[in-house]
Image (cartoon, rainbow, N blue to C red; front, side, top):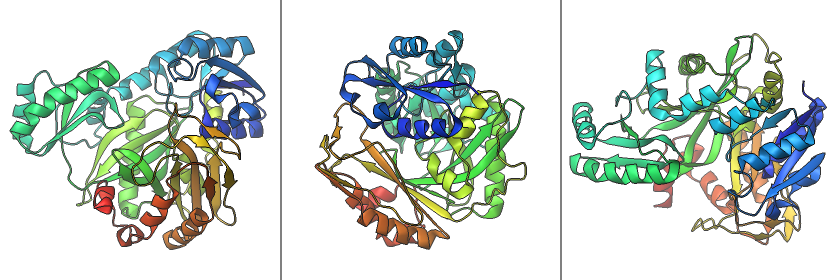
Amino acid sequence: MFSKLLIANRGEIAVRLIAACRELGISTVAVHSTADRDCLHVQLADESVCIGGNSSAESYLNVSAVIAAAEITGAEAVHPGYGFLAENAHFAEIVRDCGMVFVGPSPEAIRLMGNKSRARETMAASDVPILPGSEGALSSREEARELAESIGFPVILKASSGGGGRGMRLAWNAEELDAAYDTARNEAENAFGDATLYLEKYLENPRHIEFQVLADASGRVVHLGERECSIQRRHQKLIEESPSPALTPELRMEMGKAAVAATRAANYLNAGTVEFLLSERGEFFFMEMNTRIQVEHPVTELVTGIDLVKEQLRIAAGEKMTVPKRLQVRPRGHAFEFRINAEDPETFAPSPGTITKLVLPGGPGVRVDTHLYGGYCVPPHYDSLLAKLLVFGRDRDEAIIRARRALGSMIVEGIKTSIPLHLKILEDRRFQEGKIDTHFMESFFD
């Protein structure tokens, strides 16, 4: 195991990484922008280095500054967390070329899975189910129209290098497809510097199900069950849970096998997430693979008892994962994660400002991952995620009861947060019955 780790991130995930490092006896280096000099991860780390100005481009996305901070502090490894440089193959390559360990998959795996059209091809070659669509990147609007007419509308155009819903356009007929093609290309070029698109059949009311996977250098690959991520707004997740109310033991086994096959097909190492769409008829299809630790990883930790960050660090150090050989894949109990964002719960407008009062919930089955403290000033420059409220119960009903109690006793004053929205979702009968899909929030707002 290495002795010093640089954390190339901020906020709650940086605090989470520091906690795992302390348990493993690893000293930590925090990097921060000028706006984050008072952030909790800076205060908790053993060392800290300011790497630039307020904006992400000046600091957390500044590869040269991050690498320099690692070198001057003598860090042996770099953990990117999620977001920022986490899925940047060039960054992972530079870390490796500078003689340090990148805590994550290889640059080659990141590039392969980062190009969604190539990822589709790889999965198809390994018999992982994919949606009907283009075999690779589309060459023209005419090719897109011919393919759409052959597989049937509706179809969806997606950016090959996309993510977060950008470069994605839905078309219900040929006329809409012609207009969507140019719009999606322009958005993809502006967002990712890559205008290439691919096309898939559009599932009208799917569930978003993802499987947590781990792979170590010994060649062992395991999955740790699924997370239901269907509660989302504009492709951004709001609530996650495990297990999914929709999966039978048989379907869980089948999807788990596909997740392991996808991981092997990518020649993947470390922690990752294989994401699927699940149709109303129970058919599932590969969507993408996230080559990093997920925001919602604690959901899996609660139902398996496995510390995913510590497993990441062990695997990166060349050790074998400590997941039991005969891990019972069937989850234990039920867990939810509620993302607490600094935003107006009705308009979703950002709400930066100073925390004037903070009361975090506790008690049986409650966990809060956060970087908040009283008097902390939430900056306007970064993602709005403030905290992740997690609850665990013996079953889904008990977990929902605990979620109401925990959210109802969480106090964050001085700014607006998404807590009231979560409380309203918990009262929705469809949510309580587990009858959800990726369009839940649209009908919820209606």
